[in-house]
Structure formats: structure tokens, C-alpha cells
Image 1: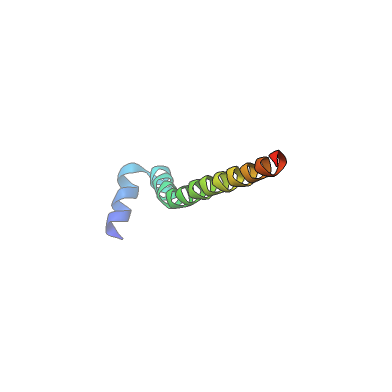
Image 2: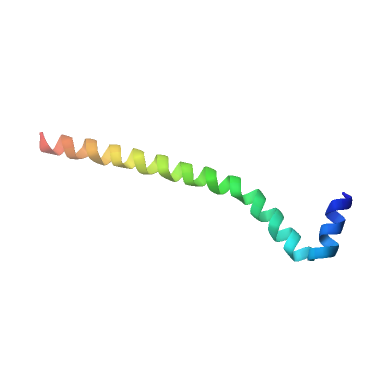
Length: 56
């Protein structure tokens, strides 16, 4: 807690809050990126299977 108070005193409250939010959001962004990649793969598979059905 003492380190936190020193950080606020030395760098300012907005910088500490911004750093905290960036650290917290990073994991969510990684998860979102993985979900988008999976969705892209699923869409490619579905579109590929639809193209095969039309060709037959």
C-alpha cells in the first residue's frame, strides 16, 4: 500500500489509473483477439463447405 501511495504522489493519479486500466484490459483484449480468430476460422470452414455443396 505504501508503494501505491508513493506512485500516486510521484506520478500523479491519472497516470496510475491509466496504467491500472491498461493492465486490466490487456487480458480481455487477448481473449477477444483469440475469439475473433476462432470465429474467422469457423466462418471460413462454413463458407468452404457451402461452396462444395453448390459445386456438386
